[in-house]
Image (cartoon, rainbow, N blue to C red; front, side, top):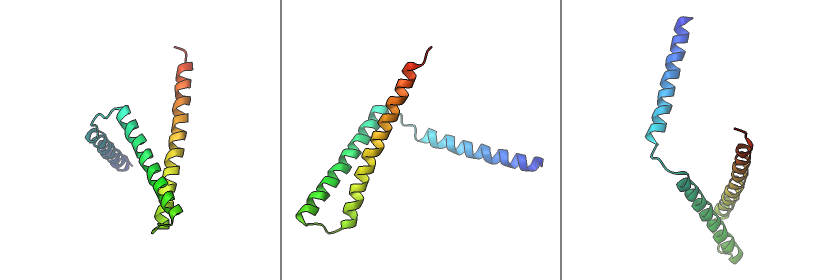
Length: 101
């Protein structure tokens, strides 16, 4: 019984050390504004691709209909996700502001 517990605790320690290494290796100290700006740029790019694809579809110059649909769904999913995250951030902010110190 003690062998099993020791083995599990060793496995847990190894896993926690690996996770710690991942966080330390990737800590390049990017600011929130940089992450937000990159996300907004990605959304704008996806929307532009979807708009260009829809224009090509309207003109009749579509070679890959599946890719057109994928680009459109990507843009839609990104906008919906951004909307949901914005709502959650605003709600979290409101809750924090209502806390009494």
